[in-house]
Amino acid sequence: MNQAKQMKFKYIYQQFFSHISVIIIAFLLLSIIFTHYVENLIYENKADELISYGDAIISDMKEYPLAPGQIINQYTNVLAARNMSFTLFDQDGLYLVKKKGPDIKQLSPDQWDLVTKGKTLIIPIDYKSFGQEGVTFVVLPYVNNGNFYGGVLLTSPISGSSNMIQQINKFLLYTILIGFGVSFFQSWYLSRIHVHRIKRLRDATSLVSEGNYHVKVNSSNFDEIGELANDFNHMVDKINASMEEIESLENRRRQFMADVSHEMRTPLTTISGVVEGLKNNMISEEDKERGINLVSHEAKRLIRLVNENLDYEKIRSNQIQLFKEEIQLLEVLEIIQEQLMLQAEEKNNQIVVEAAPDVMVNADYDRLVQILINITKNSIQFTENGTIWLRGRTEQNDTIIEVEDTGIGINSTEIENIWRRFYKADISRTSNPYGEFGLGLSIVRQLVLLHNGDIEVSSEEGRGTKFVIRIKNK
Image 1 (cartoon, rainbow, N blue to C red):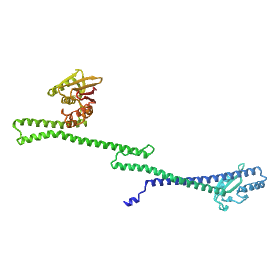
Image 2: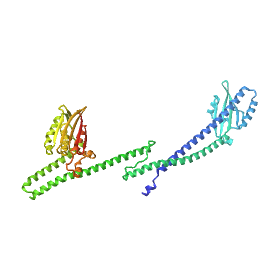
Image 3: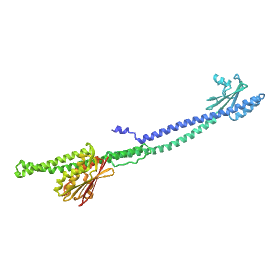
Image 4: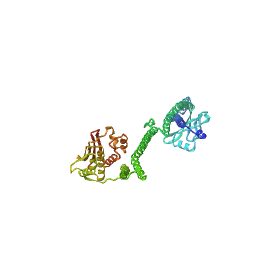
């Protein structure tokens, strides 16, 4: 582990050295290119100057062929003042005038052939006999009426030019050093900025790994690090939402287990007590039948509870299939009235049906009956000495079904809770004397949603409750 630590190369140093290396290479390349360009430019300028003097000499020789000595003396003085020398040669390469400088014999046969054909040659050479670093060597042919008569050779050392190149290189070096110093601090600063941004992401990642899903980092669309921060924040939001969902599911699971346990405890306790009494002959003969009926009732209650849970889960997971058809609503409401009439009469309630014969509803028959029976049973349970209305009508493209009672009503703060599973357990714990809601309304809501419908409830304590179901015709 210690060896791995020693081999660690921090990202800030990677960034810094990469920046500096790029800058150094760039400076070196630029300096080499610039120096080479300046040297070539100096040689070219010197060559152009020599060519211009050579053209002038040849032009004067053509114009004044009878005064060659005067022309030679004139140009000798002028060129000597500019540290230049020249040599005149004939068509055979023999010298007519020879001054200090390179020999014409230094030309290769190919070069001499080009000169005889009227080609001007420019040859930058390193001529040590001059005691200088370099010499510009120019040969101009003397051609008249297409005939080659010789030419002029001019040379000039570039000692002054070399000094100028040295000065330029010196200033270039100073510029490189200053630029390197500035780039050094700039690279260090930029590297620290990038590393700081990455470090913030690393710290945030560590917090997430420790279970903190509410951490955020500054993000932008400026560069890839900013986009990475955006993705990080999006990931954290997703994780946070998932954790909240997991927590919610866990709470629902615990609540579900508590509700199921609460619901099953009473019938199981009753059944166990009756069975033990029968087993130990602790129940009299006249009470045995009542005890057996009680066991049967509680067993059916448990079966109903299990079936309702299974039904609810099938509905929620879309494991049931609806077989929709056009149904006469009045007929369905009358069937509900007939099936629940006895239960209503036990509480001195009456069920009133109000629907026109032509009102139709597009629904699954069995599930529609299940919906209405659950709601109507709920109304009967919370109503005593009252009336329960079952109404049906058509409104534009919707069929409206209403179940209204004159029961005890629901507190406005509790209305949304009635759709929860086992909400009846909450009611029973408050010692409500009128019973409980149970799974029925949870199933009702899911079935209405499966019909692409909507269900609403309005209620006022002491004045009754009204359920309104809206189902689209098609």
